[in-house]
Amino acid sequence: MMDVSFGPEEQVLWPASVLAGVAMCAVVYEITRQVSYRCFKCYDGLSPMQKVEWNNRGFSTFHALVAAAVSFYLVMISGLFHEDANNGIIIDRKSWLSDSMFGVSIGYFLADLAMILRYFPSLGGKEFLLHHGLSMYAICLALFSGKAHMYILMVLFTEATTPFVNLRWYLDVAGQKTRSLYLYNGLALFARWLVARIILFVYFFSHMYFHFDQVKSIFALGFYSIMTVPPTLAVMNVFWFWKISKGMVKTLCMSKTHAGNGKTD
Image: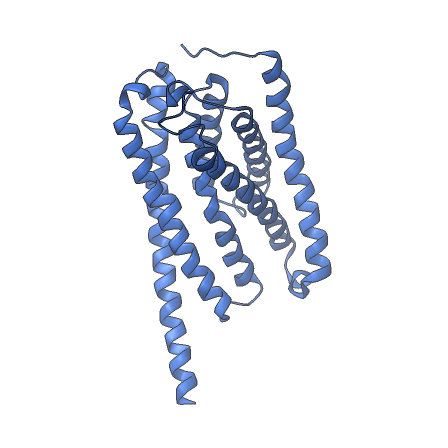
């Protein structure tokens, strides 16, 4: 059974951080709309649905930057999950910052999921529903149980690829696919995806293997979830990486063709 501990701190911190995540999405959505209207000429030429997606990608980018930065700090810099830290076994370690980040991420996923369902399938198909559903499920389990925060933070760090995905979309709808920035962003997306969503998951599963005695100590639902949800996300990451690779090869071929035509001219 999962031992849920709602202390006085959690009773305030958890709902406050979820609400903060929802509020963050609403505020950044509006800021993105206002800034884009004033600063980007192409924004006026977008269709109503494209404007919605443009603004939606604004708050998804903001959340991705925050989630990646906090996750990197907690896992790599803070020392909270270091092997030699005198904080008990790794699987049980947590902090108020990890709790807060999980709450904000739940708020973000709820806001984004609400928009996806409202405009379905314009903002994303069934794979996005599956991704958001699995993400919220895993985060909630970690938040309520206080277990496996390190692993969930590692998964959250994969959001570091989102700004590159969104910039690719922005450049596409703005008619900038032939610009060098589109090519460089595609190369950066390929490299970041390889590191954050492929290599990182190899490390993730290796860490679980070498600390399996700790993983087995998690309550039954948490144990079976950590053995199924990350592999499912990993398969989705590999599938999307394959699509990104195909797109990058196509873009590189088009770039070489344009360069060749330019030399001929």
